[in-house]
Structure formats: C-alpha cells, structure tokens
Image 1 (cartoon, rainbow, N blue to C red):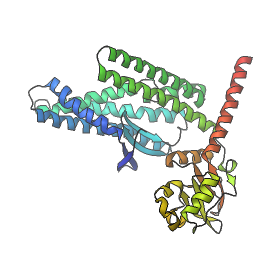
Image 2: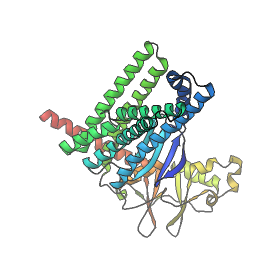
Image 3: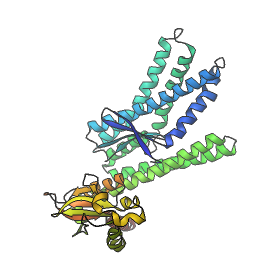
Image 4: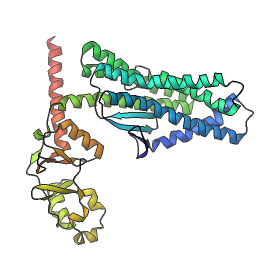
Length: 385
C-alpha cells in the first residue's frame, strides 16, 4: 500500500505480509512503550527491563492485529470471498479482498468479526490479570495490561462508522440491506468516512498548534489515509459496476503483434518497442504463446550487449499472471493487471491459442466513458425531478 511488501509466513492458508512502512511504526511503538507508557505505570524497573517490555508489547500488538485481520479473512472465506492475504503497514493491518461481499449479511459478519476478536483478546488479557493477581510478576502484568487496553481501543476505533473502517462497513451493510443498492450504500458510507478523515486532519492541526507535535501529525496522517481510502473504495465499486458482465473479448485487440524467439534484443527495441510503443510482446510458436518479453527485461541487459542476446533468453513463460481466457470477466483482467503491475495481458481461447491482447488503457477509456454517461444520466433525472 505504501512501500515494498515481504511475505512473513502463511497462517491457515493466508499469506501474512509486511509493508516496509510497518518497520517505522514498530520502532516508534517500541520506543514509546519503553520510554513513555511502561515507566509511567511503574518507575521502579531498570531501563533495560523497559526496553524488553517495549519489544514484548510491540510483538503482542503485532499478533493482536494479525488475529484481528485473520478473523476478517476467515469469515470472508466462509462466504466464498477470495482473499489476497493480510498485510501489515504503517496504519495497522488490512485483510485484502479481491471482490466485494455478495450480500449485506456477509458484509456485516465479515466486518464485525475483527472488532469482536479484539474485544475478545482484550477481555482475555484482563481476565488473566485478574486470575494471576499476586502471582504474576510486575513486568508481565504491565504487558498484559497494555495489550488488554490497546485491543479494546483498537476495537473501539474500528467500530466508528467511518468507511472503510470496520464500523463503516457495518454501517454500509445496514444501508445496503435497507435500500438494496451497494453503490448508493458505498457512496453514503464513503462520504461519512471522508468527513471523519477531515475531522481527524483538523484535530491534528489543532493538536500541533497546541504543542502536541507528534500526536498531531499522527492524527493528520490517519485522517489523510481515511479520506483517501474512503474515496478509493467508492471508486472501486464504480469500476466493478461498470465492468460487471463485460468479457475480455469486448476489449481485446485481435491479431496482436508478436515476436519470434530468435529476435535479437536490439531488433526488439528498434522494430517493436519503438515502433508500436508497447511494453510487452508475446513470443509465439504455432499460434500458441510460449512466453512474453517485457521492456523491464530489456533494461537488465547493457546497451552494448543487445545484439548478443535474443528474446528467448529474456522472455518469461506464460502463466496466470500474464495470460487470461477470452471469456473471462474484464474485471478479473483489471484486477490481474493491478496485482502484477502489467499494462497488457495475452488473451487465449479454450485451445490455448493466442487470439488477442487486452490493454489497461482500453479498459480505462471504457470506464471513463461509461461513468461519464451514467453521471450525465443521473444529473438529468435529478433535474427532471
């Protein structure tokens, strides 16, 4: 979402990834716990103990967020929603979905699962504190107290009706159930989320003016993120509505430009990339795509060596990351392009023969035209009313 992502491990079939931005917040959490939070509650411990508690508290928070997002993912999987995995980034974590929930009920249960999980973890921590009072040493008691408190705060914040927070998704599910219109429900919920983000930005500004520099900047950043995420969520629904039911066949260009496997890199650049301005070309044999060569592959070869290397040496094999069936949904093609960063996909028929290419720019042009026409139609309807 913000930087480079790394896969840490798999949990119950879900990839748990970490964004490089999470490192920033992890270090800040350890520092704030070791230097501020734990010393505030007990000043009798040694400096090294506070640092150990800071690390343990950060690890506990890390695990709590994963558990929160895992519960979202498990419920989503129960309703057949394809999940990309769980990613931790600077503002916490997110369970990444490839699609919208199929019903208001699925949306509600998926959204509420996370806060309920956090409430459960918080309650468990306080229950352990109660049962072990007088037995458990002071340092682990501080960690349990922190984790119990932070999980309840996490649940409370996420239950705010500001889309795309969990509470905003619950709010959207209610609106969706009421009107039966996901697009309208998303528009309203996103508007509330955007307004709440603006409120946090103003809160951050006033906090900075009042002397709370770090806290103010943090609130402002969260506000900016919420405004951006709420608007993006609504745009995603518009895109899904516009492409729903449209097949790749409608957008593909037939008789695509292909490259022979023995073409040298200098000829590829001069006769294909500079001529057609495409970033990717299929490598075909007997009408079936063997692989594809990308402009990024060429960048790895020094200019003076272009005439010594062929396309076959650079090309990547055909896979589900660069190939799509002619009858697949155009929305799947767009999702695949966004996930892989590719602007073009090879289109094949049921026999595996190359029949065309589909490009991101053609999908975007169609979207722009369709949304523009729909907005004009809605405007006319409102004027007539």
